[in-house]
Length: 116
Image (cartoon, rainbow, N blue to C red; front, side, top):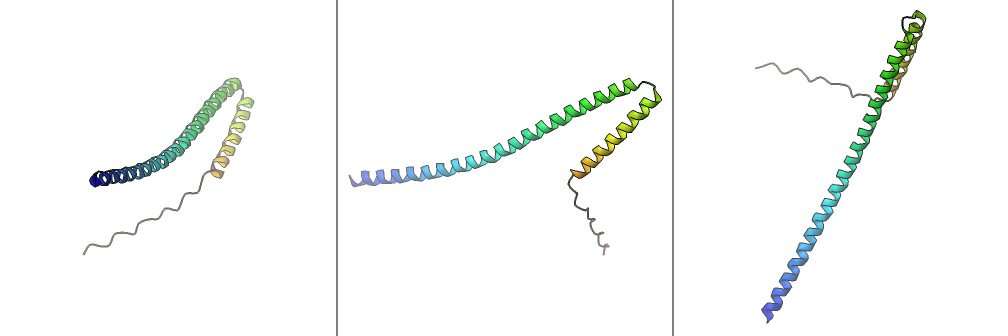
């Protein structure tokens, strides 16, 4: 009869060990899921931004085509459109420069040592 009690105690201890191990695995999986969800949310945000930028570019190109068509061959209208586009290009270049992080300086590797 004592061996039955001992066997039951061993089985209970094994079950407790298994539960602790499963709990540890679940915690790790939850942490991984959280990391994955954060990365997925960032990716979804970037896709939305890219889609918005692409739609803006399409609108810009369509508007530019309409302005060129409206200007026709009128030299004054073409000159005004050219000035407007130059201003827009300068503003865009400034905005890109202001919002682009500086790149670290590129260092060159030292020349190889001469062969002996």
